[in-house]
Image 1 (cartoon, rainbow, N blue to C red):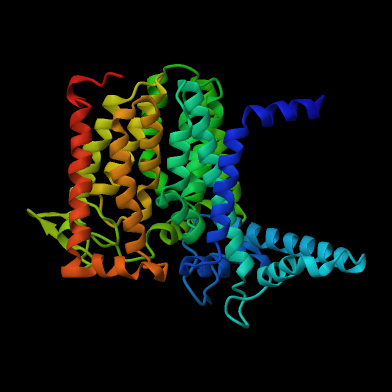
Image 2 (spheres, rainbow, N blue to C red):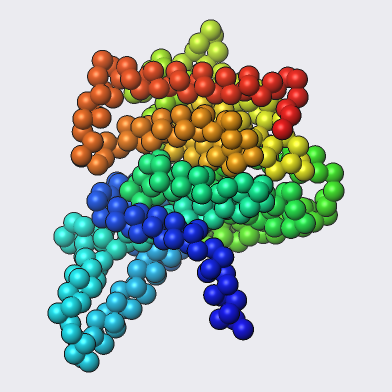
Length: 448
């Protein structure tokens, strides 16, 4: 009976599974090409957690790279990566021994033995930066990409729209595989929980929504900019308040429990005096870091304090003002019972925050950009905006890393004439976003 149901499922979703498999294999092939320095830092954190007590993690002060500045949950994830790596090494070793001891033509499995050796080898001899650790981090980000693609499929089915274009675009445009399979950033992982939390605001499972939102924030705090919108959509529901409050309590308990594992101090004291500082105040804030946003037009890559005044007002305050306006715009368009407007409001608020706030990194635009793709499922006439923004995002990612070396010609273009080309891309981002808002006729009411 179960086998029959599996066969029916595989046959029904054959095309989707083939695309996901191709995208999976393609991403796996990219993993060994380059390794971002962030993964070395995360590898060090994971190694420390694997060999020490969790409750000393944020107080430890002898690091080869950066001090821990990520939330406890994603820090636990780096520990989990080491556990996963150990399991795979044991599994691969047992398989190799079985092949050798039973004389199952071991010469035909040279590729397997070479892979196992590579997976357990150090990137730098004598260090704990193992090839398999950074590969496993990327592996989970790749799975997150596949999860996002599956959500796109489900939303397309719900909207009765042909799903292939949207899944192919997400999986094979360079911004997604560059971020997950090459860079290994956690944005796709956090986004899976973020977008589901917003979707569930429009369902009977609303009690799960706060927990999933909290999971996302505990993986990547950048989702905090969407907290006002999240609460506003709940308020507009005007129902299921008890379930939402229950979910909020569960989310709070979960967050406090995870955090408590990482300290010996009184919990509230640790959060207020240590954790918040580590998460938000360990790096000097600048007007622009590496994003092709509004501030890049004026400062490009120069490190200018976010307190630099413009018309007697610091850039940081201007950023908050602009973000407030975009947040209000997102409040105006959202309809709590219409999923397309929820996706739209996420894009307006998240992309607008990235575009106008100071001290933004290029990858912070991910949540807004992918939400725009979800919105385009319902309103394909806006698909051109997604293509423009996604292309600029990928160029922005490369500009923040300069890898792989095969693209050095692009580096020369981006650095030419005091980064003239990136400044132009920043201008395009700003004007395309404003034109997008104008096309919605925000002040006259959004109509689908």
